[in-house]
Amino acid sequence: MKLSDFDFDLPEALIATRPAQPRPSARLLLAEGDAIRDLHVYDLVDLFKAGDRLVLNNTKVIPARLFGQRQRGDAVAKVEITLLEPQAQGWRALAKPLRKVNVGEVIRFSDQFSATVAGKSETDLRLEFNLGGDDFDAALNEAGAMPLPPYIAAKRAADAQDKTDYQTVFARHSGAVAAPTASLHFDRPLLEALAAKGVTFTEVTLHVGAGTFLPVKVEDVTSHKMHAEWGQVTAEAAAEINATKAAGGRVIPVGTTALRLIETAAASGRMEPWQGTTDIFIYPGYRFRVADALMTNFHLPKSTLMMLVAALMGKGRIDRIYAHALAEKYRFFSYGDASLLIP
Image (cartoon, rainbow, N blue to C red; front, side, top):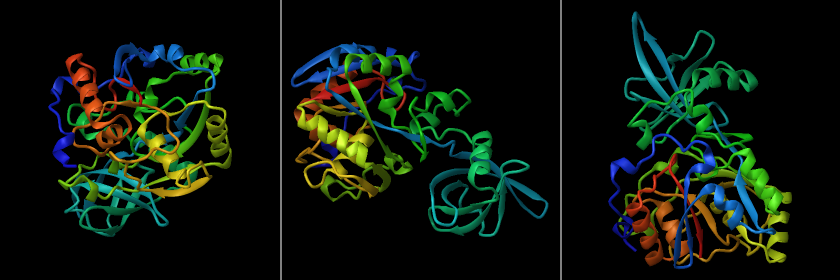
């Protein structure tokens, strides 16, 4: 398997920079076996059946992009920070410009909110903030902007609307720096309509990291090393999923993050409670243990997520699905349209 096997030409015009409103009005490509249908997300009420279980990632995106100033003598310089992950001491973060920032400097984001550069490597910084706990969360929410993916950020700056648009309606546990984007298509009325039909829900947590946007750089894809992300499957969540499987219901993760997490937690062949960092890499040849289908957005060429959907549906089939999506002008990536993939 070569990296070039997962490439395709994507017109710039198909990269969505704003989501559909209302959320379930986004288009939905249904691929069931070899059949393809053009629908909308609100049609999920007719597609899912009583006894189906949707697995939702309840991670919450933090407004991880900060714009601050550092002072050296009388000179004041701007610096852009993107928080990556909390560590035992402070936060790991990216900085622009990284080269000019020195250890020991203070970066101010507001009168009350600042961080000291406690460490520096060739790629990132370690920042220690002057606030902690709820005070940190409140200050970050006020000063920070949503960390929009690079392909959106290149077209426009994040704004106040993104704090709503780039967050799922069931977000609970702060820690992600990218949204589980397939879940952005759900609003409360759709969830309630599905529940009324007999569809059940299980929540898991995977804090999506910036590594999700890292390009694959090796031509032999099997030698690619995945980034690691922290996740948790509770004992209750594992039991719910096992019960659905035992009853003959379908387990359908919403998004590749939920899928990667439950497949990690089912390494033994059945769901187990699990907590830790996962770097599971799913590519063609992988044998799925839990997921019976997948709801997901349309992914970047040559990405690990293209390899994941090819593993689920088969390489030839996913090529046809994407050719159809391109021909029908589906909107791509984080704010784009959705697909429901049923092998």
